[in-house]
Length: 275
Image (cartoon, rainbow, N blue to C red; front, side, top):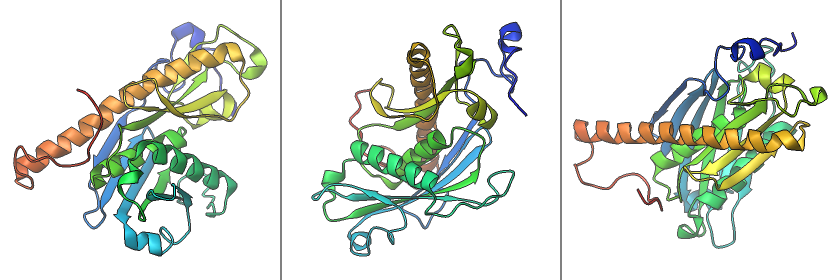
C-alpha cells in the first residue's frame, strides 16, 4: 500500500505518530554475551540487531580474518577489520533468507568495514584482525544506521581504541522526487514504509561533531532538498550518540556497584574526546 503523506501538512505528524525530528524508541545493551570479547544488542524502533566482536587477535589474522565470509578493510601495518552481516530469514514479513553473497549484504559490509577502519586505531594492532559479526533479527527501516550503531557499542565493549563513537542516522523528505516540492520538510530515522516511498539518505558522523564518516544515498532527490536532509540526519546522530553514551556509562556504573570493577579503575576503550 503506498505511503500517504497528504495528512502530514494537517497535523505535522508522520504515519507512526512522530514529528519530523523525533527518533524512534531506542533500546540498547552491551556485554550481552559473556564468551565474546565484545557484544551488543540494539533496537531502533522495530529494527533489531545483535553484534558480536572478536579480537584484536593475531590468530584470527592467520586464519584469514574470521573465515573470509565478510568484507575486510585495513592497511599493511594495521589490524584488518572483517565485517559479516547475517540476515535472519524471519527478519522480514516475507521470510526471505538472504545469502551472504547477496549484493545488498556485500554493500553493507563494505560500507561498515571502511567506516570502522577510519575510526578505530588499527595501527596499534599490526598483523592482527578484528572480527565484527552483525545479526539482523528484525527489519523496519534504517538498517545501515542500526548496524553501525550496534557495531559501535560492541567495539566499545571489546575495548578497541577509537577516536569517538561512530553513530549513524537516516533522513528523508516528506514528498517524493516526482513531486518536485523544494519546500518539503525533512524527516529523520525513517521506518521501512517511509524508506520505500520517500527519497532518503543515511549518514554517519564521528561523535557529536559534524565530521561525516560516510553518506549513502540510494534514491533520487533534488539537490535543493539534500542539504536539509543531511542537516536533519546530523542532528539525529547527535541524539543517537547521547543514547549510546548513556548505555555505556550505565553499564560502567552497574559493574562498579556489583564489584566487577574497582572504583577509579579505567575500563573500556580509549577515546580522543575532550569532555
